[in-house]
Image 1 (cartoon, one colour):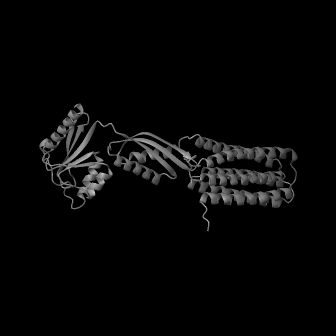
Image 2 (cartoon, helix red, strand yellow):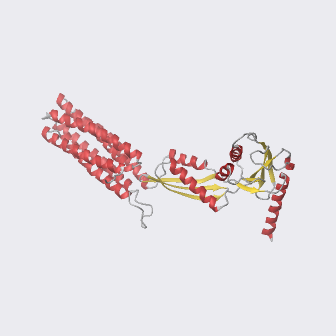
Image 3 (cartoon, helix red, strand yellow):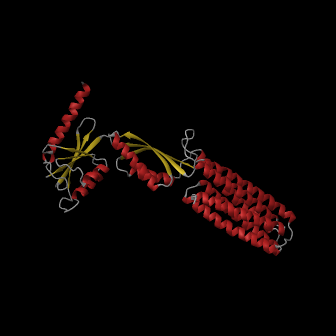
Length: 411
């Protein structure tokens, strides 16, 4: 059995139903003498042609990218939507001509029951069909199918006007048919304008809607390792979205930076539908200081002893060192609220340090392959084991390293 995508299946159903309605309305119009029904049948015929064009557009847009067209053929849908909008304008023009003509040529209709049944059937089926196409088009994010659904919804106004005109003729009020036709033309032109505007915006690479763009910004900002979003742009192409952004990160390791890029892309694609590509430019963060954390047995300033145990440490010394010259800019002690837990204390401490924006953890105890290790690694917190016994010795060792690095550069 051949599998047909939902958007294409909806288009094929639309072609079949609309062709059936065109035949019924044309036969009823000829037998009853209703100019409005004949015009509506011709209008439905243009819908069949439009739906065939939509199906062709979907077929073209599904083609894989080539060397000549590396970004694919997604915009074929929007091109079809553009011509579809012009078809709506033309349909509105035809309705105006028919309605104006009826003012002067109105007369009693024949076989009026058949005409009413045809107009009522057309109205109900057009309404159901438009709802179906709009639902599938929005779920599949297909602009041409949404446009076709709006077109069919506009047709329900025309069908309602035709039905009102026939009922008016039956009641002896002949002017209701042309009056309703002119009234509904305004709605048809409005629908065409919205489709035309949407198609042109995509073809000119306009930004996607504010809500989706803001959600992308939130998802990126919430990803550990992202310090700042420098630039964010997203555009639609057919039913797909292309995203470009530049971010700042404190990561210096290229492998970790690449992992961060993949993580951002996966998070966005899991939350935002039909994202085709996410291009991320990563810039190193120009940081004023680096934040360190050291597990301690006491709160005694630089003389505090380094704890041999990560999760059971009584305190954590948190201090910031200026990147420019290695000077200590801030120091504070954080009491470990999880030291007495029986289980998962290391994990909870790791989460606490991540929340405090710690960049590097210095310990005597190796935490490799423990639960805390994975939490810190996932947040891109660096690790270092030390042989020093106090916080002061650790800081002094760091300052010596900075001074040696300066001398190497000067030399």
